[in-house]
Image (tube, rainbow, N blue to C red; front, side):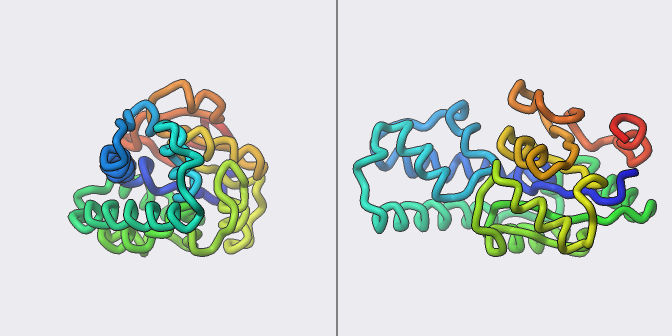
Length: 218
């Protein structure tokens, strides 16, 4: 029986993935190279510093900066990202998300956020989503990025729940792998071969219900 659902944030509940990409692409352009949307897929679900390394490798600059300089670049990227986030409203929550979260509540299912983002709290507040979750785990509470399962195991721990009854909703391959390592089932949200290892896949939360979830993977 599924008694807990854990959600990634970016690209699952809200479309902030595009803001991350635009901020990284802006930084890459200033450094003198282009960072494509296809390359940007590799930054989904991983930490800020790990994402920076991916971007710098794409430009052949992985060995050009000191750790201190990398920290500065990551801080500058985050400032760009937050400028985009500051324009968000509750209307930016993806279609069907609020209805699905409400359906889980009606069935007594516990909910947790499991995001590597250190800005998760800001986004939840801007989109009026904070009260939808029984526990929130973000980049300020974990030390290891996905595909390490720490973020999802922490969510289960906070809710006193066994991983066996948890389902993770993710839009990135690293997140699907993290769920598998945590001993949890997973739902890949979106299109793409990168989500092929998820227990099941959906393209949208519209018309998706707890009953459908249970019938499919429980």
